[in-house]
Amino acid sequence: MASVYLGLGSNLGNREANLRAALRGLTRMGRVEAVSALYESEAVGGGPAQPPYFNAVCQLETGLEPRPLLRYLLGLERELGRRPGGKCWAARPIDLDILLHGDRVVDEAGLVIPHARMMERSFVLAPLAELAADVRHPVEGKTVGELLAAVGTEGVRRIAEAGWDGLAGSAGEKLRL
Image 1 (cartoon, rainbow, N blue to C red):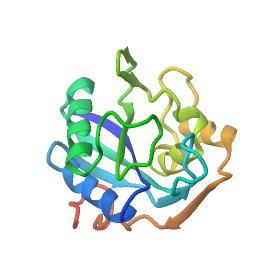
Image 2 (cartoon, rainbow, N blue to C red):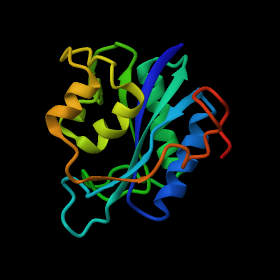
Image 3 (cartoon, helix red, strand yellow):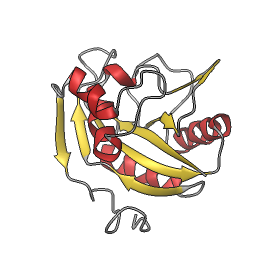
Image 4 (cartoon, rainbow, N blue to C red):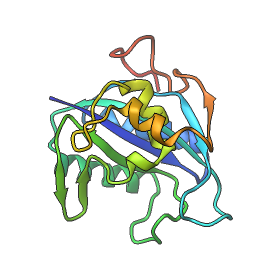
């Protein structure tokens, strides 16, 4: 089993419901150990007319290797209404990204772990730091907390505390979604 950190985002439809549905879908292939608070941030790269994103990070325990996990996440995105082939950084009901997969480093066509742009994105690092501030980036060698301190949290607003997702009690208990 590997401890994997996934980024979840949504900026179309009922954003919170989309993220809850994604978390329910993740329980089919692993155990959701923890979920960060819920954040809101402006869309990156998609133009000013795009609605803001809701973002969170979850820690997932799974036996899936990186490529099968990516295939599962892409299927879950389709199941939740995301259509493949859209413009890069277009608005979407759900976006699921593998941020870290244990201490693995993968650089293959269509799959880069750790996530290639996570170090520059406060909307990823802020929720990730809640769950894994002391985890070291396997390439950079810095902790998630150090990476967050370097980029800051400007433009990222916490809108709901941990527990917004229905996670009962402490990490490791079952989801109530």
